[in-house]
Image (cartoon, rainbow, N blue to C red; front, side, top):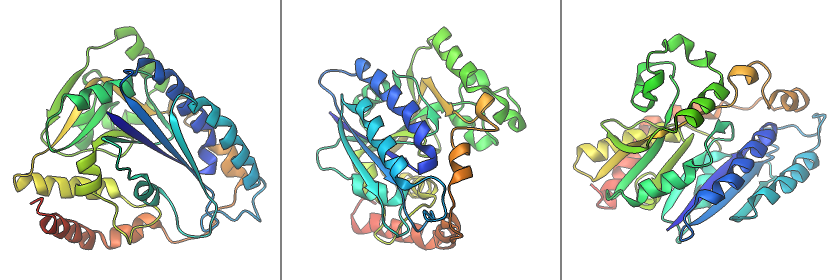
Length: 304
């Protein structure tokens, strides 16, 4: 099986890349020798977003650091990409570039997420046992800010009040996983819920059911779009299922000791971002149109 991990980095996230790439290096030792893992990384230096002339750190600093960090990915087929243009470019464009005829599974990962070095291998093994035509597999989370996330929350954290979700220390969560070494189980859930934080998608789902549309650029809640479209398809009898991988819990680094001044703070103090339209708001303004277009696409493809 071939799995591709996609990883988008803004300049101020470069130190999170060090954390993730280190975990990727550790993860290699847990992979089955028959499994091939590709990693596509994307450094976004868009001048549409950042005013480099006014910034105190030059883009060359981030380019060199990004190149240095790539040495940690020597065990993988790594494809680096630096966007250095002046267009609105981002995660949606990254997904469009990632499509690969050789790949069986895709994993999207946010730079600021902690994950165990066993997670990639565990996700791939779980995917091999999944027979649905379209599926998503998501690790568990710590308690989140409202009940809609509870379906993904690790049982030992369900008692945490919603308004205390960001009071945790990520390293306590990590220690609990190391200490308990919980057994892993793949559990189907009745609703679609993910956030592109560290999710595995099978090829048919990623490329056929929720592809990035040609007029999408930059950033937008493609995860929300995917959840709505997949729920609609499932209601029409399409063989789609989301699973939670119990025994693997991920969470953001910027809680606990990194909450106030995390790894992005020093860079953001020295980088000047432009006053540009809010990309999420632009996407959401056309959200109903996009969903209708997505459903029509499923009809045209005879998926539903």
